[in-house]
Length: 127
Image: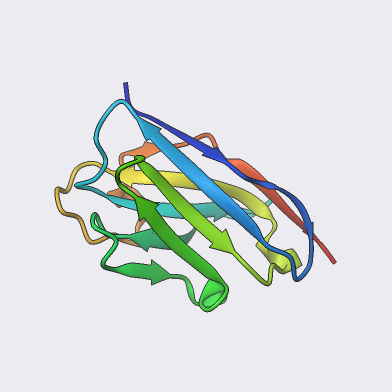
């Protein structure tokens, strides 16, 4: 059974950093693209970052470029999201997602491209 488990969320002051992890199990994920999305209270889920199957391509929403970095360790079946210079508007539940429908996937900002989702981890940034 495929499972994605996020960790690393918490409360941090503006300007601080957090590193989110997404541990995948139930299948080998090294051939598939992965993504991070977030949902703030009262807002729709939005794309944050995506990474291709081999880590060669990364995509970011404009609001996090130069602050967030997505990476992956295929040997550990884990994807990371390093978040620096955090702002109050980054407060949200962050979700990891896997696109298991496309082998050698490049990654996508479209949430409908992703087949499996984690339960989310809360990130709160205080001003």
